[in-house]
Length: 123
Length: 470
Image (cartoon, rainbow over all chains, first blue to last red; front, side):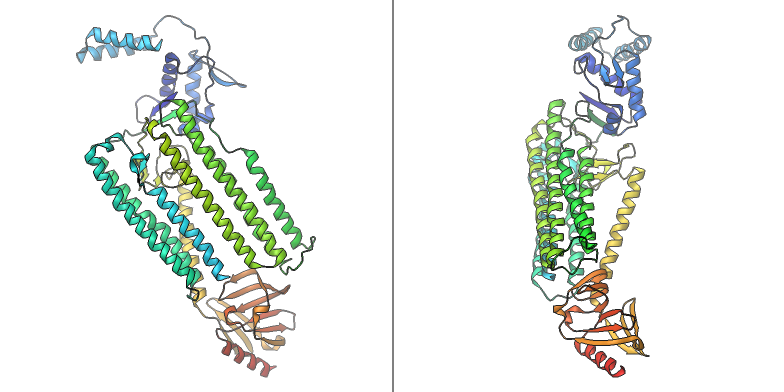
């Protein structure tokens, strides 16, 4: 799985790593039980601070996407807890996207088609 | 002996400039990942743009080719002009100038390609980098087992040389035992081996490139490249160990300097051969994977003149080279700045040393008797031997029968100066060996001197004066 980092983006690097790993799990590029690189190796490869990668892994662990232990390092969880709810922050983000689409003249049908496409292929 | 040194310089210089030429100058740029250090893009396949790139590559490739031909011809001439004064100085300066000059058309090419990109309106997205999670820390080719044996062999040769110098091991026909020449030569070659090992592992752990969205392609591409590099390092290490240390020992055991020079020549051929094989295989790998290169990481602007990497946002010190083989440093990294400064300093220092050697070669030595002293003088060096201290004087008409082994000082074809071992005796030497004559002086304190002037007539005149004084 390829991670694309934009150093000049407003989104912090740890959040970019977290977001792309989440999308990777959702799309099936990262499978349950799959080993993730160590914090040190990934930081060295990306040319970023180890704390940044550590923060991303910590967040993913807290959110229940990965599990870590001293012996095996970080792995994707084989079963991710499905709460069936959209978080408040995601609701706010979705509201922003819908608003921008409406203002730029994107029809509701087109937006729903896009959601269908993303949800359908990535589920 | 000087002819052999010429051959070694020739073997170092000529293959290096031609290998550099094949690395830096793209003959079939459409199949390459980079054109003069600028990322090859889809936009470059447009007919009009292609034509302009053809012009840029043709012009700079031809310029580099002509330069290479000129330097090759000069090298061949130098190789066969046996009596040229200051030959060592000319050779070393030629190496410096040739290596710099061959990269000049590349720098022009890089500048022209960047202007072309700008004129096409291609603006690289800044700050973008790609990492393939599946290749992080998993693509390794250099196995510790493959470097242990040559390094152990290197240690053994150092130990054997040390034992020979300490006269614990008896050597036949050698007059160099006890001078620690063998230990220092073997030790230096062993340290070069350690350096090759360290660089090899650093290169093996360098960031894997992302060329495709398919992780398997990325893994295979990086594995192929690293395997090729690992092979080159192991071959270089073996060449260093076998042909360096073993032949240095042979030189000590047999007492023949020619064997050592021939060994170094053979070693250089092997190193250049390993490098040429590596470059050829690396280019083949690039060609095979060119069609799979779907991810473009355009960081051209971070490469000054397509050669020097400067990226303050990148925490890595070591990155893969754009032009040439191996890795280079990130000049924006604090340690990179220090290394860059030291590298520049070492280049300046090397040039100053070469100039100093040139002065040593071109300044004749002088020998005179003045105020009751024998005075040997050249540049800043002066040996003063009080005539009253001299116990015996001997005029040697042909010094070719003597073997001068340098302990420290200067040892050139036209000048021997410093502490030497002559026929197993520690001596002070200040003479022009190409003039064949020398005066051997033994002082009352037991010190031995071999001295001469710039001409045989001056030497014999000083000998006559000394005889008279004694």
